[in-house]
Image 1 (cartoon, protein in one colour):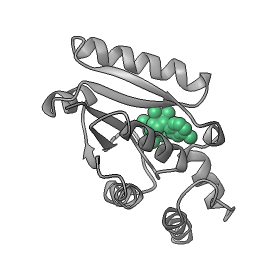
Image 2 (image 1 turned 30 degrees about the vertical axis):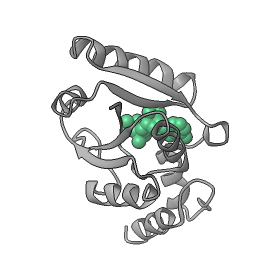
Image 3 (image 1 turned 90 degrees about the vertical axis):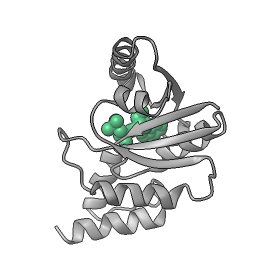
Image 4 (image 1 turned 120 degrees about the horizontal axis):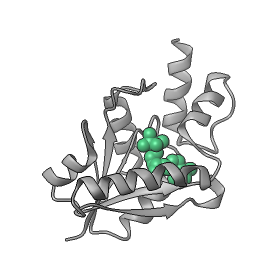
Amino acid sequence: MKIAVYPGSFDPVTYGHLDIIRRASSMFDELIVAVMCNSAKTPLFTLDERVKMLKESVKDLSNVRIESFSGLLIDYCKENDIHIVIRGLRAITDFEYELQIAQTNKELSHDQVDTVFLTTNLKYSYLSSSVVKEIASYKGDITPCVSDFVADALYKKYESK
Ligand code: ADP
């Protein structure tokens, strides 16, 4: 059985992430979307909130599972016997960083973990969680970027701040 993991912060999940999830899920028997609990970043949404929004977003995809993890991705891969990592590429600016991480993971895992890159769907190439948060913080229209329930959660977050 071919299992892949798609790790990320997903703070919050956007249509760009969902496009990668859908496409990756059709290439593998099982796709685990692993939400990072990263102490170096201060996310807007709690880990629990990010996991819930992802679960709601992928409920029609039977071979996609949402999990969370902390620590090194390669340790998570080893514990779960996963050898393929999925990452999305939007632009050349993503490439340099992603290449370095992919090579580090390959090296640290003694060639046990490879990264597969999926290029962005052009209509979402401008999209990032940060851009969506910025627009939402000024009450701008984010309906082209995220699902309605994610948009509601974003507006509520900024209202309460
Ligand atoms: P991270 O904090 O690890 O960068 P993100 O949640 O921002 O996590 O992104 C997770 C992955 O999804 C990354 O590989 C990123 O390049 C990819 N991604 C984010 N937005 C898009 C998009 N609009 N199109 C394609 N891939 C994307």
